Length: 320
Image (cartoon, rainbow, N blue to C red; front, side):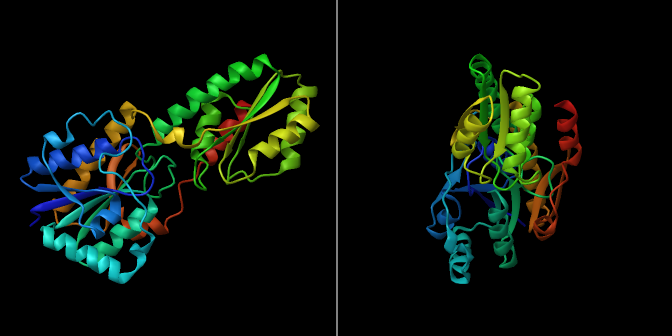
């Protein structure tokens, strides 16, 4: 029987993490289960950085970005002795089970702890939408809103100065944020790990848009880690009729008050996590598939390919 649940956030912060912490805390307390917050992710486990949570602990955090519990990297968590020390600290605190909110690296940590006797449930908290086993991750919708708002503003100034704005968005090897932004903003081009990158092809298309179509501006959305966007912008200025300008949205995408969708998603997933742990289930991760909250084993999720977005790339091509 579960008497005390821990909750932590790990990896990069994402809007909606606080909503998930709130849901886990209040639903557990309403089930007669104590809750302990772990500060600074897995590092907090190693350092026994624990805080008993009450209903008031999570008051007024639903609409806040970031994470109340903080997050920190702990690469050495891969080591057996570090994991064993974390298990000892959890047991000394009387924590029977743990909810881990984060990305795939956080999931691997949760799976390791489950195998060592502490049931863990993973919640997908990342703006990148790069976690298999779920259609949407907590934070993606808010980050998308931020991207769309900023690209819309860039389009206003681009059209005034005959510019091509090359906008780099986050994604961590996943093109969803770029793809959704490109469709929502009516971009002329989208470049992601899924589309591949051919610089000559990009310049040829922009030259065609400027000279043959005679467009007075263009927007190119590109995922991070694909190319040097400043260098690409200079080549656009040299080889096309457009004045190239690069904008890297950067960590602004991680901040801000979560959207209603992210608050709802986090709350529904937090409820599912507590229900699974109360039922004695560990080593699972929670996801949303076709608007239904469900769970699958973490190992299975890590081995699954991400859901194909071919239909959305096809839509983008037909809209351009």
